[in-house]
Length: 173
Image (cartoon, rainbow, N blue to C red):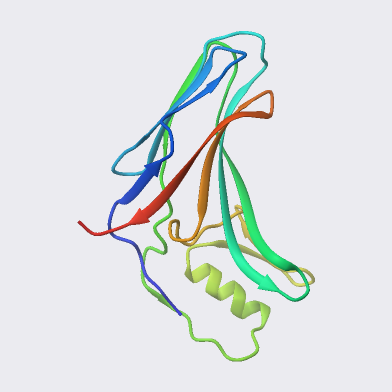
């Protein structure tokens, strides 16, 4: 397998640019910029303890006879605000390893082989002799885009009140 860095800016397509909580004066604006997804969480209302923005990533990994349809879902907290706060930042998609990585494997992989591959991809790995390698921070993404599905969720007191789907792609030009 060959993993190469992505050297073009991401293209982000949003399903909607504004997330709103109807029961409180809380909103989040989303926009696609050259480096990634720009977001602004505005929590100016009252009647809530905290408002948040979560990034949800889901990738369908395939099917198996033992587990059926398999997928990995990862949640990442982008921002959390208390009443009266406003937070702005940018989420930048992962562009793969910083240098090309060629992985040649033998038929049977040992734990040290898996740890070496993950480290070459830029992942911090702790190796526990009994449990095997663990990835820190968890989750780790080699590269965003492609078949991964993305959502940004606006939450009030931990419950989802609105969400927007978006796509990440890399196209030269």
